[in-house]
Amino acid sequence: MPPRHGGVVVPARRRGRGRSRTTRGAVRGSRPRDRAPGRRSRPDGGRPTLEVRVTRTSTRRTLAAVLAPAALLAPAALVGAAAPASADVVLAAAAQQVSAQDEEFLVAAHQSNLAEIAAGEAAQAQATTDVVREHGALFIRDHTRLDQDVTALAEELGVELPDAPSEAQQASLADVTEESGSAFDEAWVAQQLTSHRQSLANGEEELAEGSDERVVALAGAAAPVITSHLEMLQHAAEELGVPGGADAGGAGLVATDGATPALATGLVAVGVVVAVAGGVALRRQRAAER
Image (tube, rainbow, N blue to C red; front, top):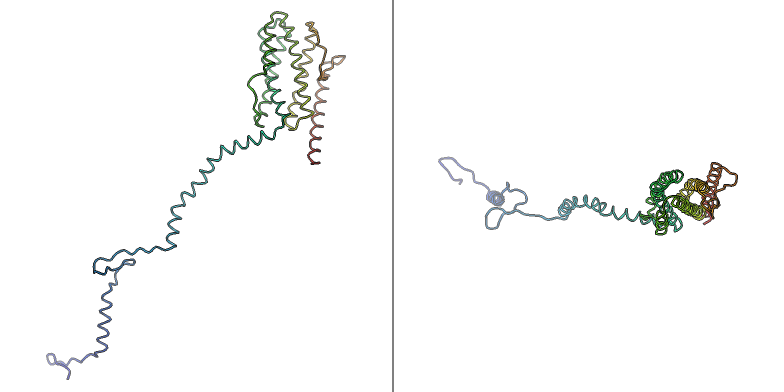
């Protein structure tokens, strides 16, 4: 009989189903549904602990986040550290490409220009004739301009130039400056004849044996200027009675027998252009044959 409760008959539940639901309900009730992900219940019934799961993906992401700023800064640091070294390497490579002949000419031309400038200053201070003073002023101007081209090209090629004329050039000018009066003028003209002939000889050697076209062109551009100076000195030597003024020396570029200075200078300029062009063509032909 079903039990009665206050006169109401309560139907009996099925034991199996009721017991199963009760059991499942008890099991479900033992696991809180509102537990946040990543938290695990403690066995002793206390507060749940935080569960940290380390995976390969999370490790890679962490390392990438840490190393990204360093990766961005590394190239800039390497470039900054390598810049001075690369500049030194470029200069060293440029210096290695300059032949011995080209380097010797640049050094000789620079020292000759310095010596001519110093001689011009001495003429301005000690000369007694207008012709020597005028020549001195002209030499200062022209050789200053020539030396600007020499120093610029030497810097471009990485060739180191001395700061003063050679010891022989300094000693030669010192001997001249020890003289006074007309003796100074004569000694100055004689000394300048010798130095300008040497400069012409240096230029001829560069035109014949130079390797770098820029250095060869520099020698060719200076030749007419030096030739013009030499012509002026030869006329000054005749005027002052200095022996050896008409001798052109080994250069052979100055003609005084019947040719005007302007004509002689023009012929020299044409010869220099032809020599430079021929030298460049010859070097290119040799390079092509190699």
